[in-house]
Length: 128
Image (tube, rainbow, N blue to C red; front, side, top):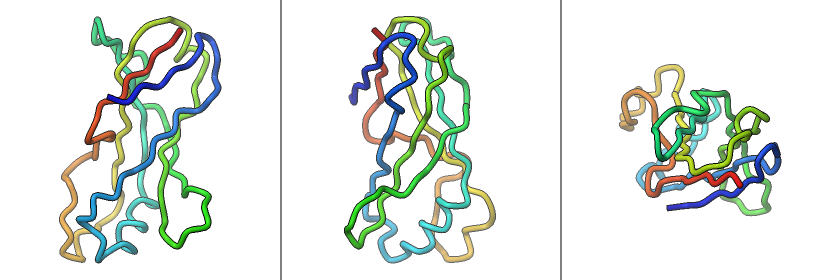
């Protein structure tokens, strides 16, 4: 489980997570990069205890990481609103990526519907 800490009422820092390259699509990197750039990213957050949504499918960004390597890395970023962090507690958070357009022509199989991120470990948001 990955923990993210933020102070109640604060909108900084932004929540940033890196998309992990699992190696399955290395041979078609340009296709993946194009698909990511033409996608819609949302962020949601639910109270761990009650399961009630605190943030529901709010617009998030996908950005190219600033670095000098030859490999492109993408980051998912959510900019907090005051109402998102006005109550202390423990929350489960996730990003969803919805691919736009037809990317199936290449023969590469993508998950149907929305891709929920993080995939490998849960994101826990702690507001103090």
